[in-house]
Image (tube, each protein chain N blue to C red):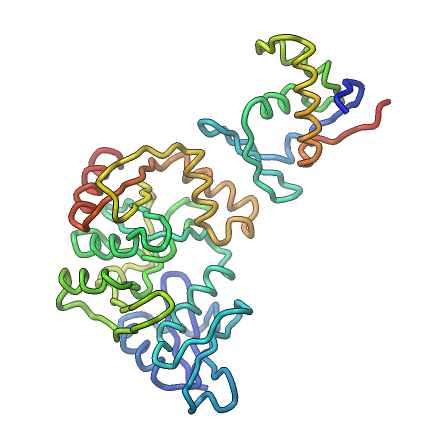
Length: 98
Length: 284
């Protein structure tokens, strides 16, 4: 776990409804009918992933263009954890290392 | 089995009973309501056992939607059993609107919604405002239309509990009250028929304009409630949010985005009415 080699792909954008509200963002997942209440950086991660299969390192590079992520190594570790959590929730799919 | 039918807002009920008395009380209290030909829900008040129709009669609540572990009530509380059963059908079975466990009143076509736990005073407050120039829309459920976003009335009998009974009798000495149901699982209960305009206009909804979270028994205070917190509290206050799926999500997010919300604490009905009027003037 925590390896940046694992690839993840976000569920297609048309499979979710996203509603930002003050301190949280609501994501309604059409497939499951579940409403997720998430905070930063989850909405930003999903937007940066687009339709691509990415690992935590690529995602960190993409996010670094818009956000100050601090130390690169730390950012990759944090994003790896978040990606695993999102995979558990079904908002991203874990793809076997190609 | 004896039968009584009643239309409350958009929902039509058929209430069957093994006993005459609860139906006679309902027919009297709901005498100004329409009696529908077709019904959405059936409710039955039945004896809990073969002899229980006559011997210490005990009422089991049956219907299209049932709670398996609902405790039976004594026959003297048959009216309460029928009201509880009607609420249960709505909570578990209604799909045409997003249901919020809340009370509502309307003025100038715009709606004030009040939600909170049992004992928050939302029911009494809606009854009080209903006698002060507002139109009473309901004290138990607010129905949100998924297409228009409007709040639709559900003006069933107002259910007054414990100290609220005397308080409303003082405000409306000529009100049409039901029998006193003493010693129910929720204490003393007495029903009050909503004002005439609430029944006559029960087909007319309105745009929600203000949401309040009242809390009775604390020094007067007003607190802003952020949309995220409002959303969370309203999903908890809704009985069919999950069942409605995407329609529930879009209806509730539209409500939360468009309606300002405040939490209010108060210690008397008069204080609450003054707070409501101030907030309505400023925010709605």
